Image (cartoon, rainbow, N blue to C red; front, side):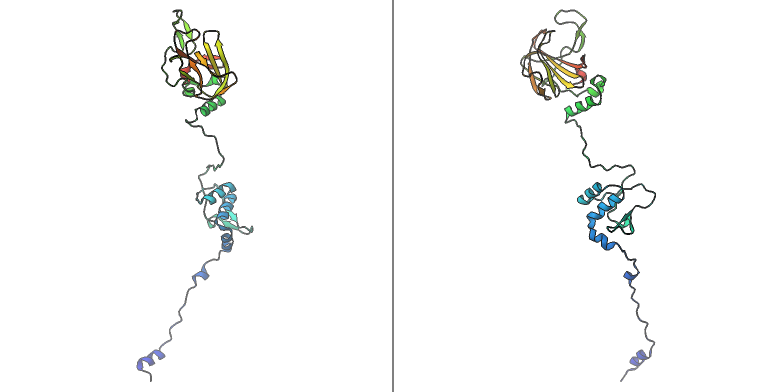
Length: 271
Protein backbone atom coordinates (compact mmCIF):
# COMPACT_ATOMS: atom_id res chain seq x y z
CA UNK A 1 0.00 0.00 0.00
CA UNK A 2 1.46 3.28 -1.07
CA UNK A 3 1.36 6.25 1.20
CA UNK A 4 0.26 9.64 -0.02
CA UNK A 5 3.83 10.74 0.07
CA UNK A 6 4.88 7.84 -2.09
CA UNK A 7 2.05 8.54 -4.55
CA UNK A 8 3.07 12.19 -4.85
CA UNK A 9 6.67 11.17 -5.59
CA UNK A 10 5.59 8.74 -8.25
CA UNK A 11 3.19 11.20 -9.84
CA UNK A 12 5.63 14.09 -9.82
CA UNK A 13 7.65 15.27 -12.80
CA UNK A 14 10.69 13.07 -13.30
CA UNK A 15 13.96 14.83 -12.50
CA UNK A 16 16.26 15.65 -15.42
CA UNK A 17 19.25 13.37 -15.85
CA UNK A 18 22.47 14.74 -14.39
CA UNK A 19 25.02 15.88 -16.95
CA UNK A 20 28.65 15.03 -16.17
CA UNK A 21 31.03 17.34 -17.99
CA UNK A 22 34.00 15.58 -19.49
CA UNK A 23 36.73 18.16 -19.03
CA UNK A 24 39.31 15.89 -20.55
CA UNK A 25 37.24 15.62 -23.72
CA UNK A 26 37.25 19.40 -24.17
CA UNK A 27 41.04 19.77 -23.65
CA UNK A 28 42.97 19.83 -26.96
CA UNK A 29 45.08 16.79 -27.40
CA UNK A 30 48.84 17.26 -27.50
CA UNK A 31 49.86 14.99 -30.35
CA UNK A 32 53.55 15.18 -29.48
CA UNK A 33 53.38 14.71 -25.71
CA UNK A 34 54.11 10.98 -25.81
CA UNK A 35 57.06 11.51 -28.13
CA UNK A 36 58.57 14.10 -25.78
CA UNK A 37 58.11 11.82 -22.79
CA UNK A 38 59.90 8.99 -24.58
CA UNK A 39 62.85 11.27 -25.39
CA UNK A 40 63.22 12.34 -21.76
CA UNK A 41 64.26 15.74 -20.31
CA UNK A 42 67.95 15.35 -21.23
CA UNK A 43 67.24 15.05 -24.95
CA UNK A 44 64.55 17.74 -24.81
CA UNK A 45 67.05 20.28 -23.48
CA UNK A 46 69.79 19.41 -25.98
CA UNK A 47 67.41 19.41 -28.96
CA UNK A 48 65.96 22.77 -28.01
CA UNK A 49 69.43 24.24 -27.45
CA UNK A 50 70.50 23.10 -30.92
CA UNK A 51 67.29 24.34 -32.58
CA UNK A 52 67.47 27.76 -30.94
CA UNK A 53 71.06 28.36 -32.04
CA UNK A 54 72.59 28.08 -28.55
CA UNK A 55 74.44 24.94 -29.49
CA UNK A 56 74.36 21.28 -28.58
CA UNK A 57 77.35 21.63 -26.27
CA UNK A 58 75.58 24.20 -24.11
CA UNK A 59 72.41 22.09 -24.06
CA UNK A 60 74.28 18.99 -22.91
CA UNK A 61 75.93 20.94 -20.10
CA UNK A 62 72.60 22.38 -18.94
CA UNK A 63 70.86 18.99 -19.04
CA UNK A 64 73.72 17.20 -17.28
CA UNK A 65 73.89 19.66 -14.41
CA UNK A 66 70.14 20.04 -14.04
CA UNK A 67 70.46 23.82 -14.11
CA UNK A 68 67.86 25.96 -15.86
CA UNK A 69 69.30 28.96 -17.69
CA UNK A 70 66.78 31.46 -19.02
CA UNK A 71 68.04 32.82 -22.37
CA UNK A 72 66.34 35.36 -24.65
CA UNK A 73 67.39 34.60 -28.22
CA UNK A 74 66.88 37.56 -30.60
CA UNK A 75 64.45 36.52 -33.35
CA UNK A 76 61.76 38.08 -35.52
CA UNK A 77 59.43 35.09 -35.05
CA UNK A 78 58.79 32.51 -32.31
CA UNK A 79 61.55 29.95 -31.89
CA UNK A 80 60.27 26.58 -33.11
CA UNK A 81 61.56 23.07 -32.55
CA UNK A 82 60.58 19.77 -34.16
CA UNK A 83 60.02 16.44 -32.52
CA UNK A 84 62.30 13.43 -32.95
CA UNK A 85 60.48 12.23 -36.09
CA UNK A 86 60.78 15.62 -37.79
CA UNK A 87 57.04 16.19 -37.81
CA UNK A 88 55.20 19.46 -37.30
CA UNK A 89 57.12 22.13 -35.41
CA UNK A 90 56.51 22.68 -31.74
CA UNK A 91 56.36 26.08 -30.11
CA UNK A 92 59.33 26.73 -27.86
CA UNK A 93 56.97 27.18 -24.92
CA UNK A 94 55.94 23.53 -25.25
CA UNK A 95 59.46 22.33 -24.54
CA UNK A 96 60.66 22.33 -20.95
CA UNK A 97 62.91 23.70 -19.57
CA UNK A 98 63.02 27.02 -21.44
CA UNK A 99 66.43 28.59 -22.14
CA UNK A 100 67.10 32.31 -22.54
CA UNK A 101 69.84 35.01 -22.10
CA UNK A 102 70.42 38.68 -22.71
CA UNK A 103 70.94 39.78 -26.29
CA UNK A 104 74.61 39.60 -27.16
CA UNK A 105 75.42 37.18 -24.33
CA UNK A 106 78.04 34.58 -25.20
CA UNK A 107 78.09 31.02 -23.89
CA UNK A 108 81.63 29.67 -24.07
CA UNK A 109 82.87 26.41 -22.60
CA UNK A 110 86.47 26.78 -23.71
CA UNK A 111 89.21 27.21 -21.11
CA UNK A 112 91.07 30.49 -21.24
CA UNK A 113 94.35 31.36 -19.57
CA UNK A 114 93.86 33.34 -16.43
CA UNK A 115 96.68 35.42 -15.06
CA UNK A 116 96.43 36.44 -11.42
CA UNK A 117 98.60 38.07 -8.81
CA UNK A 118 99.54 34.54 -7.71
CA UNK A 119 101.32 34.06 -11.07
CA UNK A 120 103.79 36.97 -11.35
CA UNK A 121 105.86 35.24 -14.05
CA UNK A 122 102.68 34.83 -16.10
CA UNK A 123 101.94 38.53 -15.66
CA UNK A 124 105.45 39.47 -16.79
CA UNK A 125 105.28 37.11 -19.77
CA UNK A 126 101.92 38.51 -20.79
CA UNK A 127 103.24 42.06 -20.49
CA UNK A 128 106.32 41.36 -22.60
CA UNK A 129 104.45 39.33 -25.22
CA UNK A 130 102.02 42.20 -25.79
CA UNK A 131 104.80 44.72 -26.43
CA UNK A 132 108.56 45.01 -26.36
CA UNK A 133 110.18 45.89 -23.04
CA UNK A 134 111.19 49.27 -24.41
CA UNK A 135 107.57 50.41 -24.78
CA UNK A 136 106.35 49.20 -21.38
CA UNK A 137 105.27 52.07 -19.14
CA UNK A 138 106.43 52.39 -15.53
CA UNK A 139 102.86 51.92 -14.32
CA UNK A 140 102.63 48.60 -16.18
CA UNK A 141 106.09 47.33 -15.18
CA UNK A 142 105.84 48.11 -11.46
CA UNK A 143 105.87 44.92 -9.41
CA UNK A 144 106.59 42.55 -12.30
CA UNK A 145 110.09 41.69 -10.97
CA UNK A 146 110.69 40.09 -7.60
CA UNK A 147 113.13 41.45 -5.01
CA UNK A 148 116.68 40.15 -5.58
CA UNK A 149 117.16 39.87 -1.81
CA UNK A 150 114.89 38.47 0.90
CA UNK A 151 114.92 41.90 2.53
CA UNK A 152 115.49 45.14 0.60
CA UNK A 153 117.15 48.19 2.10
CA UNK A 154 118.08 50.76 -0.54
CA UNK A 155 121.47 52.42 -0.61
CA UNK A 156 122.89 54.35 -3.57
CA UNK A 157 120.11 54.96 -6.14
CA UNK A 158 120.04 54.73 -9.93
CA UNK A 159 121.21 57.83 -11.83
CA UNK A 160 123.83 60.56 -11.50
CA UNK A 161 125.68 60.81 -8.18
CA UNK A 162 129.03 61.63 -6.59
CA UNK A 163 131.35 58.69 -7.15
CA UNK A 164 132.07 56.82 -3.86
CA UNK A 165 135.43 55.75 -5.30
CA UNK A 166 136.81 58.89 -6.99
CA UNK A 167 134.68 61.51 -5.24
CA UNK A 168 133.98 63.18 -8.57
CA UNK A 169 130.55 64.49 -9.49
CA UNK A 170 128.63 63.48 -12.57
CA UNK A 171 129.13 59.76 -12.06
CA UNK A 172 126.27 57.80 -13.60
CA UNK A 173 125.20 54.90 -11.40
CA UNK A 174 123.82 52.18 -13.68
CA UNK A 175 121.82 50.30 -11.09
CA UNK A 176 120.26 50.29 -7.63
CA UNK A 177 122.40 49.35 -4.62
CA UNK A 178 120.89 47.32 -1.77
CA UNK A 179 122.38 46.76 1.64
CA UNK A 180 123.57 43.16 2.04
CA UNK A 181 126.20 41.52 4.20
CA UNK A 182 128.72 39.45 2.25
CA UNK A 183 127.39 35.94 1.73
CA UNK A 184 123.70 36.95 1.58
CA UNK A 185 121.63 34.89 -0.88
CA UNK A 186 120.95 36.69 -4.16
CA UNK A 187 117.68 35.69 -5.85
CA UNK A 188 116.58 35.63 -9.49
CA UNK A 189 114.09 38.44 -10.06
CA UNK A 190 112.11 36.36 -12.58
CA UNK A 191 112.29 33.21 -14.63
CA UNK A 192 114.88 33.37 -17.39
CA UNK A 193 118.09 32.06 -18.93
CA UNK A 194 121.57 32.84 -17.66
CA UNK A 195 123.53 34.56 -20.44
CA UNK A 196 126.61 35.58 -18.43
CA UNK A 197 128.26 34.28 -15.27
CA UNK A 198 131.81 35.45 -14.68
CA UNK A 199 134.09 38.39 -14.08
CA UNK A 200 132.90 41.77 -15.33
CA UNK A 201 135.89 43.78 -16.52
CA UNK A 202 134.19 47.17 -16.13
CA UNK A 203 133.87 47.17 -12.35
CA UNK A 204 131.02 44.76 -11.73
CA UNK A 205 133.28 42.10 -10.26
CA UNK A 206 131.63 38.69 -10.19
CA UNK A 207 128.50 39.22 -12.25
CA UNK A 208 125.44 37.21 -13.35
CA UNK A 209 123.12 38.27 -16.19
CA UNK A 210 119.68 36.71 -16.71
CA UNK A 211 117.68 37.16 -19.92
CA UNK A 212 113.89 37.23 -19.34
CA UNK A 213 112.91 37.59 -22.99
CA UNK A 214 111.66 40.41 -25.23
CA UNK A 215 114.66 42.64 -24.46
CA UNK A 216 114.44 42.46 -20.64
CA UNK A 217 117.55 41.48 -18.63
CA UNK A 218 118.62 41.71 -14.99
CA UNK A 219 122.20 41.76 -13.68
CA UNK A 220 123.63 40.99 -10.23
CA UNK A 221 127.04 42.49 -9.41
CA UNK A 222 129.92 42.52 -6.88
CA UNK A 223 129.11 38.90 -5.96
CA UNK A 224 131.37 36.88 -3.70
CA UNK A 225 130.38 33.75 -5.67
CA UNK A 226 127.70 32.37 -7.99
CA UNK A 227 126.27 28.90 -8.58
CA UNK A 228 124.79 29.15 -12.07
CA UNK A 229 126.26 28.76 -15.54
CA UNK A 230 125.57 30.16 -18.99
CA UNK A 231 122.58 28.52 -20.65
CA UNK A 232 120.97 27.47 -17.38
CA UNK A 233 117.26 28.21 -16.86
CA UNK A 234 116.41 29.67 -13.46
CA UNK A 235 113.07 30.37 -11.84
CA UNK A 236 111.90 33.42 -9.95
CA UNK A 237 113.30 33.32 -6.41
CA UNK A 238 116.07 30.80 -7.13
CA UNK A 239 119.35 31.48 -5.36
CA UNK A 240 121.82 32.34 -8.12
CA UNK A 241 124.71 33.80 -6.11
CA UNK A 242 125.97 35.24 -2.82
CA UNK A 243 126.52 38.95 -2.30
CA UNK A 244 130.04 40.34 -1.91
CA UNK A 245 132.32 43.30 -2.61
CA UNK A 246 134.24 42.25 -5.73
CA UNK A 247 135.13 44.69 -8.52
CA UNK A 248 134.73 48.46 -8.09
CA UNK A 249 133.12 48.31 -4.67
CA UNK A 250 133.72 49.98 -1.32
CA UNK A 251 131.91 47.37 0.80
CA UNK A 252 129.53 44.41 0.85
CA UNK A 253 126.30 45.12 -1.02
CA UNK A 254 124.32 44.08 -4.08
CA UNK A 255 124.36 46.22 -7.22
CA UNK A 256 121.21 45.29 -9.17
CA UNK A 257 120.55 46.40 -12.75
CA UNK A 258 117.61 46.18 -15.13
CA UNK A 259 118.38 46.45 -18.83
CA UNK A 260 115.84 47.02 -21.59
CA UNK A 261 117.14 46.34 -25.09
CA UNK A 262 120.68 46.77 -23.78
CA UNK A 263 120.03 50.09 -22.02
CA UNK A 264 119.89 50.38 -18.23
CA UNK A 265 116.69 51.72 -16.63
CA UNK A 266 115.71 52.49 -13.04
CA UNK A 267 115.25 49.07 -11.35
CA UNK A 268 112.74 50.55 -8.90
CA UNK A 269 110.32 50.96 -11.81
CA UNK A 270 110.15 47.15 -12.12
CA UNK A 271 110.26 46.08 -8.46
